[in-house]
View 1 (cartoon, rainbow, N blue to C red):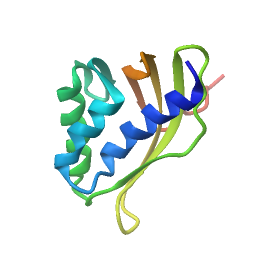
View 2: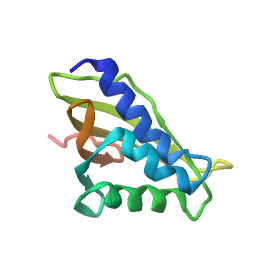
View 3: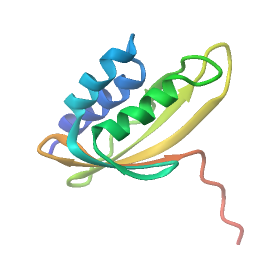
View 4: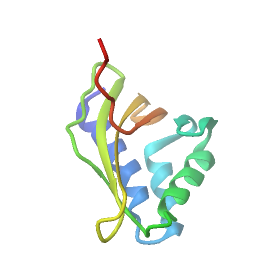
Amino acid sequence: MHEETAQSAIDTFISAFNASDDSYVTGLLSQALTSDVVFWGPLGRSEGIEAVERFVLDIRQHPAGTGTMVRCSAVDMPDEWARYQWVFTTPDGGPRLAGTDVVHLRRSLIDQIIVFAGEIGSSAS
């Protein structure tokens, strides 16, 4: 698997958060994810594009307004796993959330997503 292929799937996934209309979300996710995708998100484990679509639509309906999701790092891909960092920002200086996703790819599509939202604090030694 090439990093360019992974980056394309990841960027298409992220573009679903920024679609001009909710009706485009399913199509974008279908281009990036396998139908049996496993999604480990903030609320636990779910399966299928429909589950990821619900998550994306919930983020798009943020109380502070429609935000913007961007990939803010390169895609690091050892073998079939990839990771990247992202930032979600709401309009007018509203809440900002950053995190790291780890994804697994199968046949050029994402079949597993693990979302790590927020910063990792320093270890108290």
